[in-house]
Image 1 (cartoon, protein in one colour):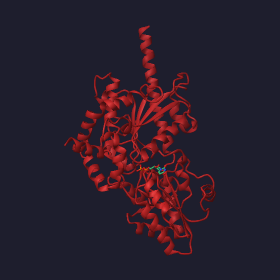
Image 2 (tube, rainbow, N blue to C red):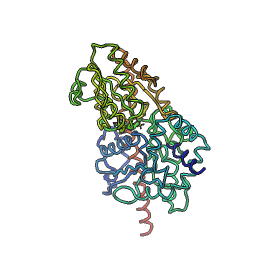
Image 3 (cartoon, protein in one colour):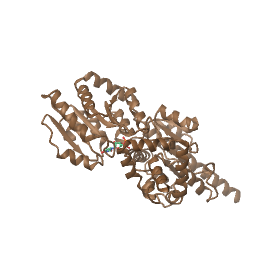
Image 4 (cartoon, rainbow, N blue to C red):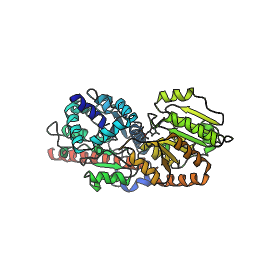
Length: 457
Ligand code: UDP
C-alpha cells in the first residue's frame, strides 16, 4: 500500500549592497529607493529549486541566472538545484525525472495521477508524505547553498513541487527548529511559474512572498488558490537569453547559412521539448511524404530537434528521405533561438517554454501533443492567439503545415499574431523584481542588526 502511495505521489508531481542595474533607465524608479551609502561587499545568494522533469524548468532557472548576471554583474551568486534527484531520500523521490518520462509517454497515466494530485485529498496525501520522508534531506539542501556552504539569502522555486515543503523547512530553519508554521518564515521565498496556460494547484501557496505568473489564466488560478493581488505579478515566462531581444539580428538567409542549411528553402523545425516527445519520428516521415507528393517539384527543408531522445535521433538518421526534402537531424541543441529564427513553421508538443520562445520568434506553430491537465490550456492559448493549430494525427499535421507553406498571407498573419503574444522582456522584468525583494530584505536585515548594535552599545 505504501509503495502504491509512493508511486502515486511520485507521479502527481510529477549600491554594491544594492547594485546599480545595468539597464538604469528601465529600472530607475524601483532602484531609487536605495541609498548608495549602504555598501556591503558580500555577494548575495539565491537558491533556485527545480527538477529536470522536462527541459523547461532548468531552461527558466538558467534564464533567471543569466538575467541577474546581466543586470547586476558579479553581485548575485545563483545555485540551481534539482532537489528531487540530488536530495530525494529514496525511490520514487530521487527518480522523478525518469518517472516523468514514462508518464509523459503514457499520457493516460499522467492524466490519472495529475487529476488525482489536484484534488484536495491528493494534495494532502502528497504534502503529508513529502513532509514525512523528505523533510530532513531537503533541509540539508536548503541549509547549504552554492560555494559559500551557508544558507542562501533567498529561495526561488521554478517547479510545482517545490512550494509546500521548502516553505515549511525555511520556517523551521528561520526559527531554529521551533516551528514549521509558514508565518514564521523570514527568508524570502518566491515562486516563478513556468507553465503557460494551465498549471497544477501545487504551484500556488499563499505562504509565498511573490508569485510570478505568465498569463491571465494562471493569474486567475492563483487567485482561486487564495493568493492575493499584492503577491501576484504577471510578465510572461522566463526565457533564455538568446530570446530576450524581440528582434533577430541579421537576415534569415544569413542565419541559415551560419547553421549550414539552405538559405532560401521553406523551412520547418520539429521539436519535442527537452526530452524529444510528441512522435517526432512519425511526424517527420509523414511531412516528408506530404511535401513530396503535394508539390513534387518544390524543395523544402526540415530540421528535427530530438533533444535528449537519442532513440528518435538514431531512427531518423537511419532513414533515407527523397532529394526534394532535406532533413537535418539534431540532438539536444543549445541555440534553439537560432533554429527557430531560421525557420518558417514550428511543429512541437505543447511545451510552455517552446511556445513562448516561438512567439518571440514570430513562428507559426502546429501543436502535435500535450500533457493532459498541464499543457492542455497551451493548445487553446496558441489557437486563440491566432498563431497556430493542433492535431495529434501526423497526416493532418502534415497537410496543415504543407498548406501553410503554400499560403504566404496566412503565414504572415500567424507571424504577426505570434509576435503580438510574445513577452520578450519578461525574464529581465522578473529578475529585476526578484532582485528588489532580495535587496530590500538584506537592507532591512542590515538596519535591524545595526539598531541592535546601537541598543547594546
Ligand atoms: N530545448 C533546448 N534544446 C533542445 C530541445 C529543447 O534548448 O534540443 C529547450 C526548449 O528551447 C525549451 C525547453 O527545452 O526552452 C523545453 O521546454 P518546454 O516547456 O517547451 O517543454 P518541456 O521539455 O519542459 O516539457
